[in-house]
Length: 245
Image (cartoon, rainbow, N blue to C red; front, top):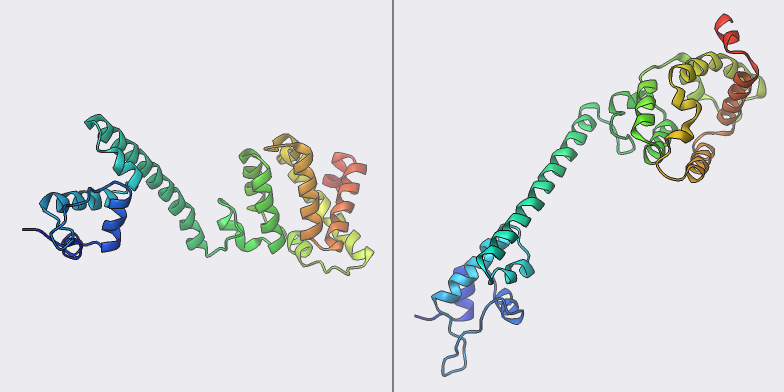
């Protein structure tokens, strides 16, 4: 018994177009034709078509399948390579699911880097964006320090986040004076904050320029002024002054 192209496609659960494509790339031999010119397929063609479909279901590309017509060792090597690819893909998917779990648990958004999900609700939009940029520029050691620092929340943090862009100099100075002791404590506990350039992944100059630009873009003028004032206060005052005050 012989089948037409349409009948063969129906038997194999594929399409006429697919069979013609396999013929065009040499993956499947052309059958003999009947006197009327129509192709007539036999069981060998059906088996070959089912074999190709099975290998495609296993994840092999057509080019990989074409290479399987050689020695048996070639088949084993191709299957082994495919298995390695799948293992890597599964591992990556597991890693992605591990990252998705805390996002779902804490209902955080996409602008929260891995590891910051639990503290995300205490961070401002600018803080989350700054951390996202930093995670790209700095080593994991530095980012871990940022995670630890983010777990501590003080009243002045909320005041800084709420500081309006048009705050007057007195308001800015008052906030900076109250922020200074906290910032000094952070610098003493986390030396990496004092010299972040030591923890840059790539070129230090490029990273620090990016950080400076991000600060300007993400925080309002009053907040930037407060940060500059804190830096000035800490630079001018001896380490013990803030603690004694």
